Length: 501
Image (cartoon, rainbow, N blue to C red; front, side, top):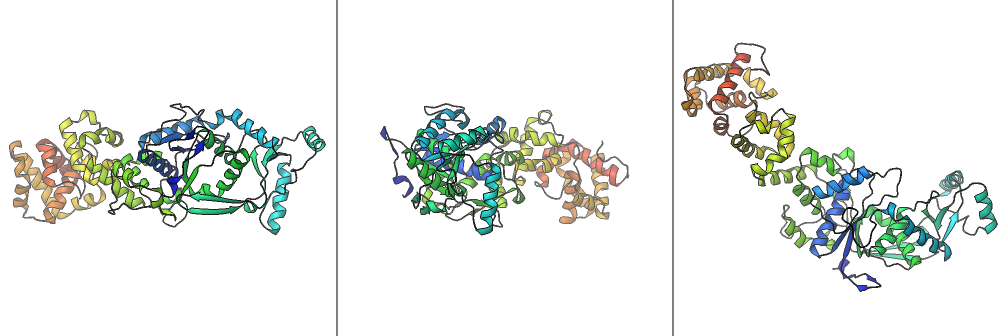
């Protein structure tokens, strides 16, 4: 195992593995970040490691506590548990970067004192001019014009009202090797970093690439598992660690999640936030199963594994080095599997909000009938929200006819069938409901699709759904009679009563 040979060493010697997930609270939890969180959680369970949740909120303009709460809520919905974090505390807090500014200030002073950083007084206009000139000849790299300012020059700039940033002094011709648990050895040269980079903004707020390595060290993080988009920033973080004599964790960069066009997953491909997946009716078990195995295969090539099975089999070295393609249809299929695994009692509280959307008050329906209906309908639900399409056929007083059903019910054959069905309920006692289909069949002479399509459309408003005998059993004599009478009024008597009894 390449990745887990490493054991970080601090002042207290060797110690257990510590992982972290560090989201920025600038929006909803994106599906790519959710995957990273899931992988970290699974590894923490596999190796009995500590999982730290750290909030990286130094982007003051975009960060919000509401976003943080949303991210925590999504993580909890996914079943991810952490041992340390802003909500549970721990020995290495605070766990919000915005509450650690005094810590970072001390390290900045250390870098300034030992010459590894310096104040930069370049204005935004001057930097834009440098960039414009650079683009005419090649790529932009900060010139280092403020590297060796005299004390008098610094005082003059301050007198002008200039607020300096702090830049890290990138060493020349230095090689940085990232020994990545997934990618292998990745070699960088300090010459390709882009020159001295800003570590503290002019407003005094430190930037991500600077403080992330400080936090990892102080929180004794031994393994950093994160997205591949962070790989290019890693040499900057390692150089800062060297300058501050801080330990460097073992890195593992996960391949990005792409759409089917092999471009980074975004809204144009479909749903990208965990919050929306929950609202659409995905189950957390399905989303975790799918994201956990995105980019690797189980030993027996099964695609649906329990949490325990995934924990037993997952290894960073098994994860693909190339991008993983997000297959929305496969996720829906996987979700349907988990829906079918749940009992009607388990599904009831999950689908109640969707029933309300189509005017069905679950509390007003006889419980036994409600549970029987859920059991009959769950095979037709890839998502929990699909119940909205099918529940009215069994739980409403009258069905909502879809277009296919309407076309069937306007046919000459359906007219004959509706009349005979109406006669049945006018002449037959409730005890004989079991003979309904046979009587209509005998009176009309219809069979096969000629019989069952209009009969299903008449009773359910759809051409697909549970077996007809199960529908009739659930609706009972009164329910079937009410639907037949309703269809008779619309299609035989031609009364404008659709939607009313």
